[in-house]
Picture 1: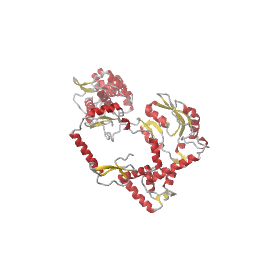
Picture 2: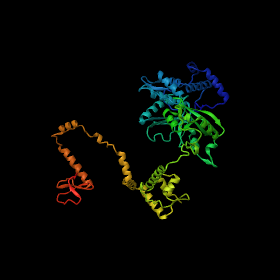
Picture 3: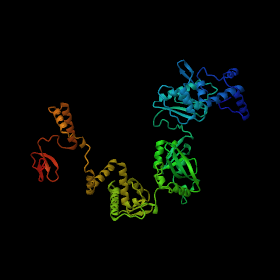
Picture 4: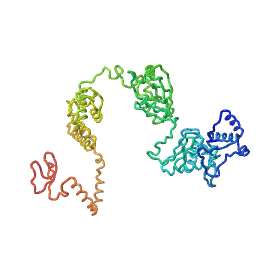
Length: 562
């Protein structure tokens, strides 16, 4: 027989062998039949194509043993998994907690183990990894550690146990090294050192793995990984013959998502072609709750299946009213019945109201100030609002006019749009100048910095801005002012402590070098010896001049406080 445990036979033979296997169970039958299922006395690996020959009874017993090991991981470990212990090479004797851990790993797809060091966790993991890969096809296991040697040491334990397994139950090997062991059933174990790209190209995720997806439109899914691509494609709004894609979905319904931890709920509308797409809802509150508690703590149920999306929205409007939104046990932030919280006409809270003249003037002025600085002074481009621009065949009076109508606010985006083929200034000279300035802006960090500095300086020279800044800082102290010692008693004690103290020669040398360095960078002399201080009587500016120089007109000697 070739490639055990993958055995080829017809249905009749399989039924006969299964019947015989149910009768052949236990050590007595094994001994009587002279079966070869026993530990190899030397370490061996099974090669691809290696044939094994059995009598019908032996074959039945082999199949029975494989089924038993596949069904019960603890039986497999206590019967066949070998380790090097105090007495040398021996079959492991599991502790009760190790058995409990293995059964939990066999039953659960996600498991957290709280255990101290040196209690056999790595050995328990080794048993589970080997059991998964030899009895189940298409398994991919990554052992990752901060050091490659640690991961390889765990893999070495697995390889040791595999080498001493009975040849009848172990699959053939297709790859065998210190970092990898792969079997002919397409299962594989690899050892890695943790790092940015250490697992690149090696996926251990299977199709039944659950993942959480949040799209650009606020929707949240908790679904199988093999559905990610279809969800990503379907979550993008697409117009087809004037109809939104959502209205063309097969299923439209109102659903309710409930947090199983605190009982809070979210009600919404969903349109989809897959009832099991894992959609949980959309919005800031429900998203924050899912991030906090985890998607597995939420359940979704369908309230009512509807004929179309419009019908579902009407039902949502009835269920999610203001009283529902105001409840403490709901995640809904706005009333239902619409695909967006924007309200028009009578539904808008400002409907029928008007801004007063003073408010309109203030808004108009703020808008003008924003655009005059945002598209010119702030970045440093020499634009004129009189220059017309053309974008996609439409002519605009200015850059500001185009930006407002197209709702494009970021200057780099505006520049890229104007530099596309067919777009730009009507004036060809201005368009060429724009190309030069934009290339310079992109490639020269100093130019970008200078533009930014000039914009800030221009803003700071604005009297209104300076006044506003001054008013905002009134009554506020600088951070260092709070650290100044103002306690007279502390000041006196500090003065007494330092009275008579002198700086060391090394300290004087450091101070001298620092002072010399400062004046070399800023210009001027290190010493003020032979100079006098003068003050501008109008600007209150101070500077030193040689005592032989005459004092300029409008300046006074000293600080001139009076």
